Image (tube, rainbow, N blue to C red; front, side, top):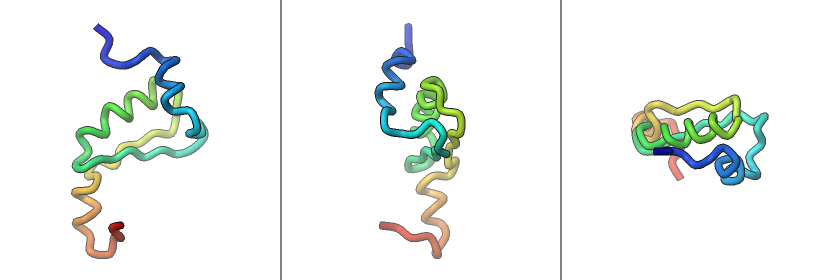
Length: 67
């Protein structure tokens, strides 16, 4: 059973994102960002990171902007 789409389909999903760019994925707490990290890596993106604390961490600092 395949969990992710085929590599070609993943690459198609991420069209428009430069493979040479740093990509940081995040969500509410860092958990649901993980599948996006895996999909981007499988699609051939090299510089992909997860903001582990995600929004939960971001809002814990009074100086961080929220829009």
